[in-house]
Length: 482
Image (cartoon, rainbow, N blue to C red; front, side, top):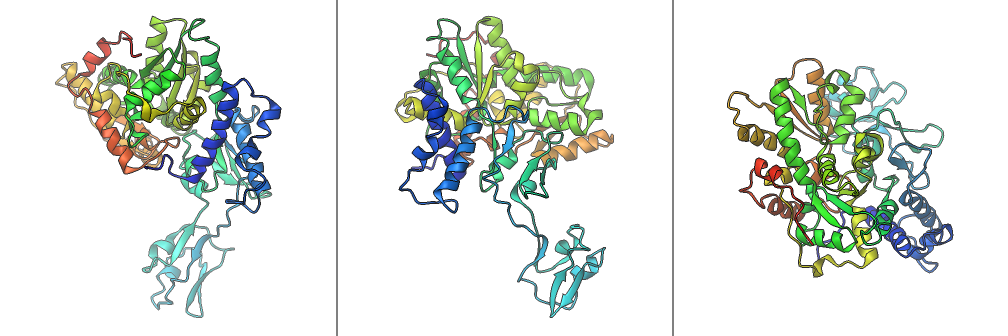
């Protein structure tokens, strides 16, 4: 059987979320019961598998439980450090390894601008008092014997929002620089950085509708759903979501179709534009490139666009977004989207909810999907948004405007494009900003990033390939998918 998760960190996080979901569904979510979650996951006769003893492992689980219940209310960030879990990774910056051959060319020493390298006993050594971590010696070494050793969380963070507390040696996150992309969450090998969960809120939204008689509950699902399971279709997942008690389940891909069309119109009108779909990218532009931020599309994200369409037809709607994105939690808490989307959870949280509710996706037949086009579904991959905007311009009948799009694959490329735009040297007229490598299918809260999952997504994207964007946005009538 294909593994459901990439890592054991995801597995542990899932177990905690499943326990919390079960207690919520059973109306037993009390402080006393949550305190016993660690003992249920790690019983007294268990042997430590991750840390020095089961008591430290339990302490970490207790911190995970706190995050599963919404985290520290005093901390506005959706990403938090679990102090007990942080391993205080012992890294030494620029380091000479045993691969040093003691060559006589001394490229490393000659490249150092601070005279920090000396050859001792035919082996390069670095004077840490002089070294400024520029890395030129590592680049110069013909053997690759000099490495830059960084903490995984710091290496993963492309906005330099993570630093090390000099007193505790624990990681800390600077809110002013963090864009909630979640790269650190996925890359930390100890799972010491995690996102706050709102799974209890999502479950309560459904429960308090009393079988959708008080109000109607809607799940808006990101198009990257097609990449979550190697052997389960999106149609089966949608039926599973309905079995959780939702009134309807809708593809955010329809919102993507609408966004592509409206962004195409805005781009033709203004001549230069950046996408507004990825909240981490938008936050990056707003925090670091204010001169470019004014060119961010005024259109909402596909999630918000879909939610607006639902509320227009059903004012009683309560809407939960489900996707691979931690930044969507930030979007639903702190941007205008909070007025149309009530809660955001991840695919990992969705799976925990499925299992807590006893929903077996393999046993389901699947339901008919809504009226999205392949272009809307393609938003989940890097380049898909640009393809959709190009198609929308074509469908508008505009033959004069020439789209020159740069599709940014990850925050490093986003930074590069935004920097060029801020200096007026960007040749392209449209920036597609994707904070995650590969796009949303590479999101930090995906269940898996395997090749099989990507192949499954390719099948999902190509569904309804004959349907145009214009057809898709003209056919949203919320047909029965039950």
